[in-house]
Length: 539
Image 1 (tube, helix red, strand yellow):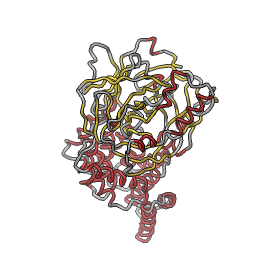
Image 2 (cartoon, helix red, strand yellow; image 1 turned 120 degrees about the horizontal axis):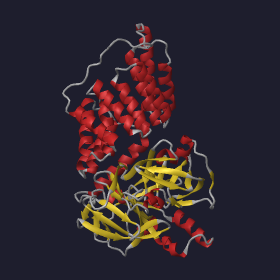
Image 3 (cartoon, helix red, strand yellow; image 1 turned 180 degrees about the vertical axis):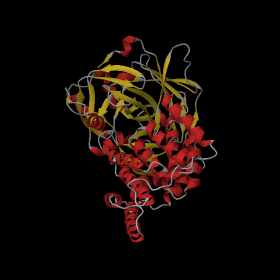
Image 4 (cartoon, one colour; image 1 turned 90 degrees about the vertical axis):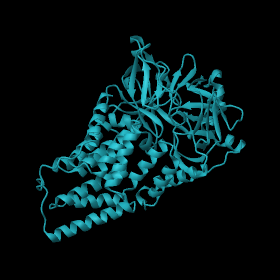
């Protein structure tokens, strides 16, 4: 946490600084030439073709052209910077993050006084979710040029992850002021207005984003179009209207290691839902949605645990959990059938305990970070009750650990390290019974795997997936140390790994620490465990 506080202190210095350091040298760096006019014209033509390919969404062709440009023996400084930043951007969009980072690192070694190159380096680190080094690179860029738009945008993204929305908003606005033709700047500001629940402004900036011809990012544009359609459907009746006391409790039962609550949709009889911090939105089973007359407003392609799934968006008038009611809730309609069919087969094989059979009545998931974004949510696994409060718990009575979370898509992440390997962002996921690694992480860190002792097929929305195991592995979850044996490894197709990446911290760990999710301040708070808990084997 300390390192992120340092970054924020430096950021404040950037905001209130009246001037930026002028580059010490404008001389052509070693290895960068001053070519003749004919050569420059040819190089500029190559750059233009590369940029056209990128705008058309032809990423491999764009990458080849950028590399052709950078491979020239003679290249002036401006063309080199444009070519390098263009190549890094194209590699990031093509999910070649490590290659993007290597390109950016090589470029700043050649030219040490270029703000765009340091911004490009920050973007590469950010794509790899190394937020500390990303922040340092963006800060170096604004030190060189206070008005660098990409650096301001990058600092805004890091602030937004830490729920510093006012600071993020300021950086995004500065980025647009310095360069007003970059689509993602408007998308970022629209997200800020969504977080502030200023939906008219969010629609305004989403519409600006939609006005760009984004052939290189069609999926995001389609998602934004669906979002605008949904927000407009709310009309003058704003979404996410909360009616609840400042402090209240929600009982739950633990089924298959998942916290299951009862929730009422539009005043109907309460049904069973997983209380899921790993879900960005509340999702309702398609069959049940049809029964109670929920209508789809828009459709998008979503990500399930095992494969892509089609999600319909809807807006229930009311979702109620005990004393907590929230009206006009943007929710998803999905099919729970693949998961329930898998569990039914487990029951027939005698692998589902009778005490867990109520899981077969599951109707959906509650997106905790989305519905409870302004609350502190504590899960007491022993008492099987969820305590919700407007303010975090008093840490004086019981010593606590406070760990900085990052919020992406309403889902909380913490940096975790397995068996002393490099810390990576893991989802803190109450919708996962077991802590799991994904093969992206095990491949990256070269962690040896063994076949899972049980039959394949851990269930999740959208289907089920195969499993391997790490036989033993100590894991550092933020500041909390536990020993785990064995540790599940989920093997999935590459497309899913690009989204989920590294892993999840599940209820097998969380149930020992009764975590508090402070969504307002992006903090995970747990009681300081005794030595026995710290070294406990969690099976």
